[in-house]
Length: 180
Image (cartoon, rainbow, N blue to C red; front, side, top):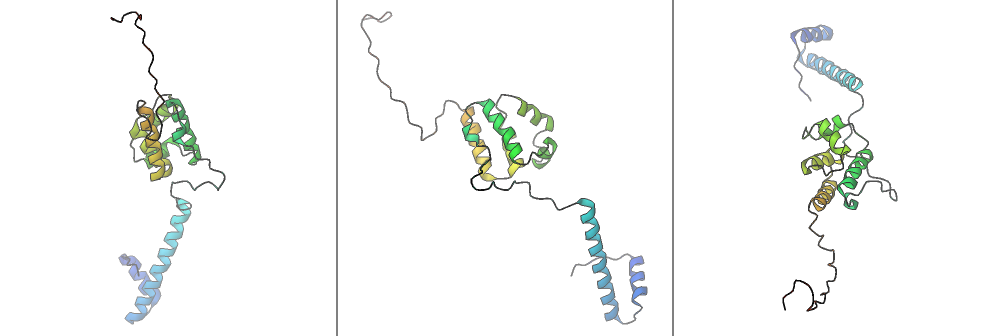
């Protein structure tokens, strides 16, 4: 049973309502009064605050309807930013302020707004906090971070990408600038 501290006034009222001298009956009356008070308090809190808050990660799409944007399909920073916008929509289109709140104020709402208007790659810290605030998914966080790194490190190739064949060009003795 949950213990509740009664004020002196509440205790006197319960005792007067109980009208019982025996300790057991008084205890039962107090417990039922407390239970009734707690139930009405919970009911009032629920009515005041609305339905309980859902976790902020969006539910998965139905099979055959995968609508979540794939960050690894971005080939340019502008495409990456466009996919971030689509990801926000996919996540239920939370407001910028809500995203900032969920990201524990890792950035400001104006910073997020500017990043999503730009065609430049946003900072990795912003991308990670944004993705976490939209889905709270480790898998999504990994995919977006990998895509960000791939775009940022243009000179790097994915490990499974084959190298193009290189053929030697014939060099003639008569080429200008070559000493023979």
